[in-house]
Image (tube, rainbow, N blue to C red; front, side):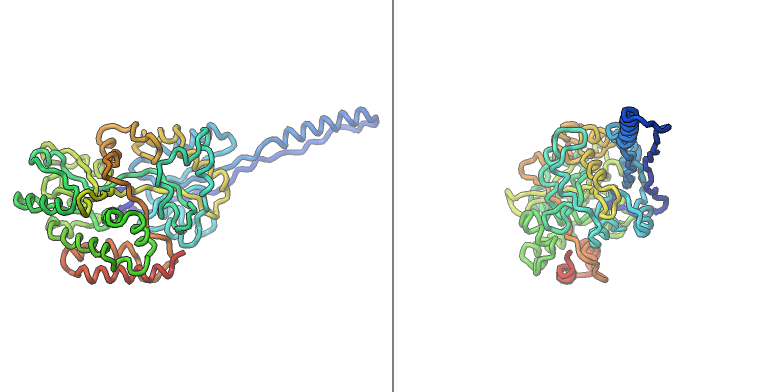
Length: 466
C-alpha cells in the first residue's frame, strides 16, 4: 500500500539550525602623522573591511521529507545538486518513513524545518493540523518566480490544474499554501490479459459495468474488490466530478448545506449500495492494514475484475503470484451516462513551508528548484513523477500507460480534498464518508443511515471552516 494508506512505526531525530559566518575586525598598525600616510592607511583599512563585509553569511536549510517507496537516496542527490549551484546554502536533510514522529516533538518545542515534503491524507494528519492552525506559509508568489537555475517560471513548467485545487489552496481563497509534487493517477485496476482472453470490453458507464458484473458472475468471478475503505476517497471523488464537474465536487469539499442530500449525491450512495452486491465476499474481512494485499491478490488470481488503486500497486504486488497472461490494466471510474465525462483522480504529495520556518526566502527558492529539469530527472530516476510539462514523454512501459490515462479524450483529471476546518470533537469526514463503506457493503447499516451521518458531519464542519 502506498504512503498515503500505510501506518508506519514512528521514531528518530530532527536536526537544528546553525551556521553563521563571522568576521574579525582588523586595525592598521602604527600611527602616521602626515596626511598622505593617513589617507593611504584609511584606504587600505577600508579595502580590508569591504572585503570582509562581502563575505556573505551562509544558510543552513533544513529539509524534512517522507521516505516513501522512492527511497532516500534521491534526496541526497537533490541536496548535492542544489548546493552545487547555491554555494551559500547548505541542505540538512531529515528523511524518514516515520517523519511525523520525528519532527512533531521538535515543532512543538518551536524548532521547525524550513521545507517539508509530507502529503495530506496520512493517519498522523500533521499537515492538516498545520492547516487548521494556520501554520503554513503562503507560497503563492513562487509560481511566478523563475525556477532556480532556469529561465522558465514555475507556472510555465507545472501542468494545468495542479495549483487550483483544495489540495494546494486549502482555504478556498485563491491562495496557495502547498505545492504539488509526485503524482499518481488512480483508477480501476484490472487484468488486461483476462479481458483479451474473454473478449470483454472495459466498461465506460455504470450500466455497462453492471452488465459485465452479471456476465463475470456466471463464471464465478466477482466484479469488484477494494484494498481498504480508504481507497474510496479517489473513487467517490471521481464520481462527484462525473456527476457535476469541479463545481459540484468543490461544493461537497466545502461542506455546502444539503449537498449530501441532493439528487446527485444520492446517485453516489445508491451506486455504492448496488456495487455491494457485486463485491467479492471476503473483501470486507480483509480490508485492513494487515490483510489488504489479499484483496489485491483477488485481481491477480482472476477472482475479482476491478479494484480502485494507484500505480504503486504494481510494485506492491511485483513478487505476488498471478494468473497466466496477467497484464496490468487501468481505467477510469465509469460515467453515469453514455458519452458522459469519466474521471481518474490524481493523488499527489505536497511540499510546503511552515509559517514558523526561519529561512523562508531560501525555502521558497528551494521549492522552485523542485521543478527544474535537473531535479525532475533525479526524481524520475527513482520512479517519482512530477506534474511537469512533457514528463510523460520520458516514461515507458506500464508507467506510460498509467500516466497516459488522460490521453483518452473522455477521461479527465480529478483532484482536490476537503477544505480545512478548525478541529471538531468527534467529527472526522474521512471516517464517516469512506470508513463506513465496509458496514454498508456488509449490510450493517443502510445507505440512508450512511447519508444522514455524512450530512451531519458536513454541517458541523461547515461551521468550523477556516
